[in-house]
Image 1 (spheres, one colour):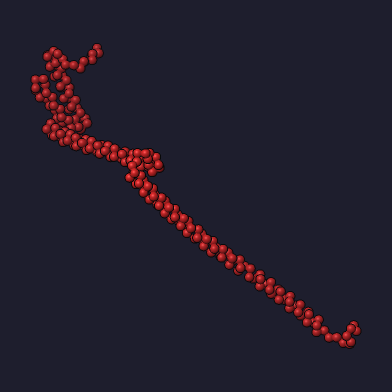
Image 2 (cartoon, one colour):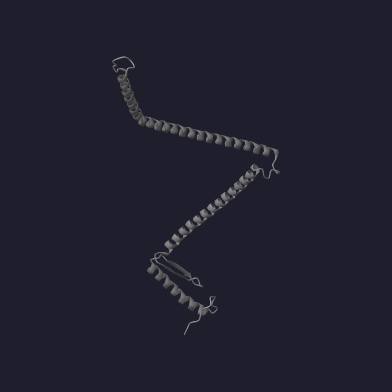
Length: 212
């Protein structure tokens, strides 16, 4: 036979209430003992009856377990307070950061020439000074960049000139032997021609000129 589900409400009959208390108290103490043995847990159980009678169970000592519980509770409360304090700090920092971002956005719009109607003369003067400083900074940055580019181009030019001079020197070294050989050949040809010419000019003639 299936036992019906017990309704979770106070038992009105005193005798039934006392019997149920005794049964469930013993079951609760038994479960506490089993939990401490099976799981090697520190368990302390305190029960007061409706008449004020104390029933307790402890795997070691009820007093020690209570002291350990209070110490742990204090640590938890301290950690919770620290966490709450940290959260409050984060919220304050986030709010300050949001205000700074809004201020920077407003300044940026003013620098871009937007929403200037609400600016006073003093604010407009400050914006003018800021723009002048920014303009000088931009010009100085551009000047440095141009100088660096010019220096790089000069270095590249010098490198190309050196490379060109080296190539020209190599070309001259290769062409000199050919020029010398050509000069020698020309000298030999001229010498041979002069020799033939000399031989012709020194030819001996006998008789009257024009008789041959």
